Image 1 (spheres, rainbow, N blue to C red):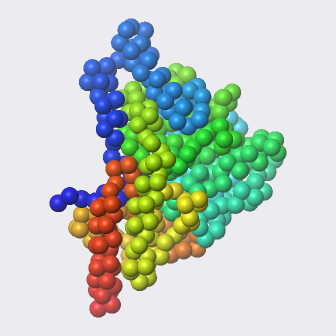
Image 2 (image 1 turned 180 degrees about the horizontal axis):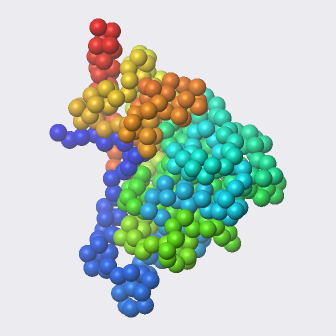
Image 3 (image 1 turned 135 degrees about the vertical axis):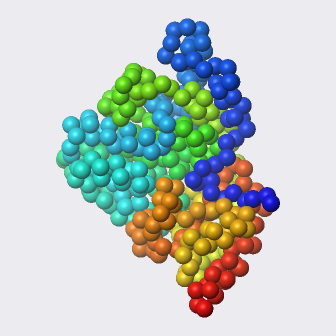
Length: 377
């Protein structure tokens, strides 16, 4: 049975162009790019070419790109780097709908933190974030788009206003959910730090980056080597990072976003087809990611729906990408004042088709009806 994969927001299939770009560095070119021999220099050239590709895609300078192994590492490097630069203490401002990587990194640092709330669409107010900044604030960490409901956030406004005010706090923008689906311009964000990842839009796993504003020096999270211009210790993952660069050149962002938007609107048809199903987040094209749909299903827990859809050959998700192992209530939906226990996340990507979405739309009504009947029995 051909399956319908609708969980691209967790991880997307690797694009063929990316695989082809990576293969030579998996098969033949295995050298450490830090070595001076010909093999090492070949690897170095490939690595720096990938850095330029990533920088160009994100409207950044190549020297601002610090490759990492994941978006989670990039986020931790940003949080710990900002706090390390401040001597390990200080006040932090973030929002109630940030990814668990942001929340947990801040919690582990044991610093004072102000958490700004959100509206019913999951959107924070730039006014409230800026107002929460104090003289002793060392870091403001906000997302560019929500990873669970798809709401686009005013992160650029936060950065611009804090710069205009001459605030000393560093600004970190988590763009891991946005990259590959919405435009990301490091220059336009006005941020000091920006975390991105490759595997949610057709790049390889193990490939991500922290963008660090030119002239800013923060202590590295990983030490033990002078790689990445002494900003991240550890031998460079040349195949993965070459793949990241290849993904940046393979994508047609505008065309893919239009196609994904059409598929998501097709999937959203279940809201009218199935009683007690509602859509979370901002449904407008201007206010949301094109590839993601979050649904609330009244009266039925997420797990049996996920399992039943899986039996019908449909892969979707519940909650955010790093909280599914326990299927705990969604902190994002809780912050929005929504039902945090009964949500589905449907996400499409570069390889998704209308047939994939139609299978979901066809299967869901009967599944919900049967599960509700069992619950009422």
